Image (tube, rainbow, N blue to C red; front, top):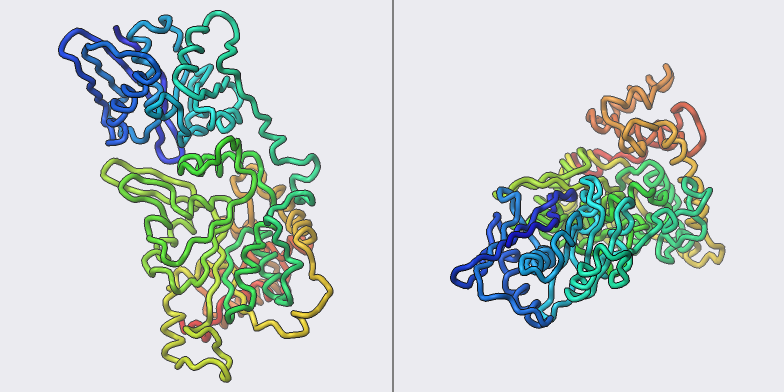
Length: 525
């Protein structure tokens, strides 16, 4: 007998439906699988056979053939175990004919028949809704993740026997074996009336607050501008000046995720297999801080079986690169294209995948190998050593950083000052107001922040008056700016004007934005 079961496969962060065809026929006993399968998919025959046996279901001594269609697209992962098992049960006539019709199945089977967490449930369920599938059965650990998608009944199962019992009940009313999971996605992270201004009650920074930062007003100001416009930020300074401390607190002043952004972030985390058990949505902006020994594939994404890299896991959030010059030069240069296009394309023999990578880059570094340049009393590095160290960061990468700020050592008075600095909640209010201005400005354009403005649209959104034009011309010549740096100064100036509630960019905004450009003499470029 032939059976057809609906399942799904991943292609980047998107998905497509797969038809699992199972045929049981007379002939020499065997279990064959076809359909452009990866090794872990081929191993399903062992997992499924043993799982059914341990669940008390004996497979017949006949020829079993499984085809995963479309056969010309590579299938990867272990989530085909459940649909294959259901297809075998239907072909063995152990469940009523048509009981699995218009139901999507996804999940890995343990040898005891239990269902284990699968990756990529969210994008697969979303595609199933678009294709008119009415129900889906997934592991109980993934049920909340799939239930955030409206328009489909999501059921979570613990083992194959529960799935079998549910299919036996089909057509006899609502199943009590597998209850339907439901999630109100809006209530997970939204507080009415505070979507744009930030949430006082939300611990975005995980208990980290800007009030804990002593001194460093310039760096705090740069972090606020970067958060308001989603600009890239580089902090340089000696060890212990507070670079990492400020970077870790930036998520706490960023605007909260919208529902659309949350679904994007959750899709990437789900495809990477990093969703926590029972978690429905990622509701906080990501903060990824890889060690400088990270490989290029782990940072950008890839390997033999393409997986999202750190730049994709930081989508809509912050990617913090501490000790920037210590990263591999090739890895840093590989960031150039994702920083411009906000996505990364990975090509392998098996095909091409594209992952989103719209992140805010925050970097920190020492000014020299010992860390104390230009303090002549402490720094023992030669001029050549300093230039060589700074030169590890290429000019094209530096050109893509909107704000660069130098931190000085914290003086004793600031360190012992009992008066707390401005809190993250206060800064977040200003960032939220600036973000609302940008939201109204870019409505219907696809942009979200000033940092997203394309070079072609800079003149439209960042117009200059006669006086401002003359100021910009002087800055362009004196700072030896590239065309890209020119556009970035205008974007930053637009954000500074938004923070101050100004409709147009003024000379003071341009001067402050230019202050945050890297010094040509300092970097030797």
